[in-house]
Amino acid sequence: MTDAPTGPLTRYRLDLAYDGREFHGWARQDGFRSVQGTLEHWITTVLRLVQPAELTVAGRTDAGVHARGQVAHVDLPGAGLAAELERRLGRVLPEDVVVHRVRVAPDGFDARFAATWRRYVFRLADQSPDPLLRHSAVRVRGPLDVDAVDAGARLLVGLHDFGAFCKRREGATTIREVLEAHARRATDTGLVEVTLRADAFCHSMVRSLVGALVAVGSGRRDLAWLASLLDRADRAGGVTVLPPHGLVLEEVGYPADDQLLARQREARARRDERQP
Image (cartoon, rainbow, N blue to C red; front, side, top):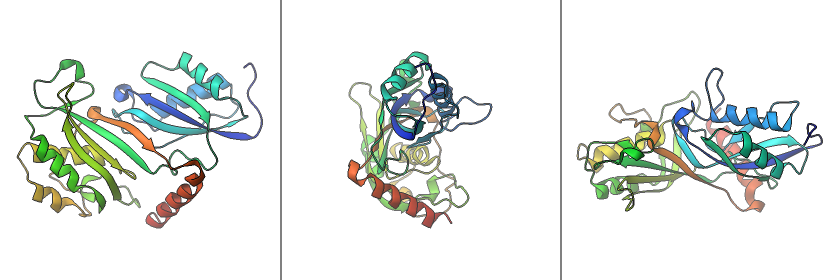
């Protein structure tokens, strides 16, 4: 490819992963290294775009948070760029971000608004932690009662106001639906893995929820305390926000192709209703 692509805009889906340690989160920020800024720079560069590329992402991860199954989309002039873009990005991107696949997105696809759920896993080291895992698991005083952590996680399932666990933003709702929540000890690493899957997450929600679950698993708090925080609109001062490096966005879910546009419209309407 020698010339900048031309023609009507085509939407492309990118499936990617990154090690969040040296990124200041997903979102582009002047003066800081971000995943979005890095990808947009290299997409614009390798395709020689006249207008800079602009990515839309399924989940805007915070500084230090990792992703194994992140999804984004970008609108580019011209069709037939998927294989070329995937190949060129594989040559130039830094080692801490990888685009696994680029493909033309189906009609109605929007990486953010067409998504039906996001699945995160938070990994905790509570027993003689392996030093080689120190960048991907948060060390806590242990041992944790994994059954208690699991019981607490299952209390979170359902539609609730998670204001006690979120950093509030002006005009934004803290109502979310948790679709799946559980904890287990991984047999290969010995880490405690807390899985949370929801329609969406507000700022700092996962790290705060796991902080509360650690308090339950360590015996410092009980299940009644955790239950009392659900549907509380104001942030709870007794909830610890855990460090980001134990958190990984593992997967994003989408409906069938013929339901994408309906899902996108539904999500946009809900946002407009909740954010006047």
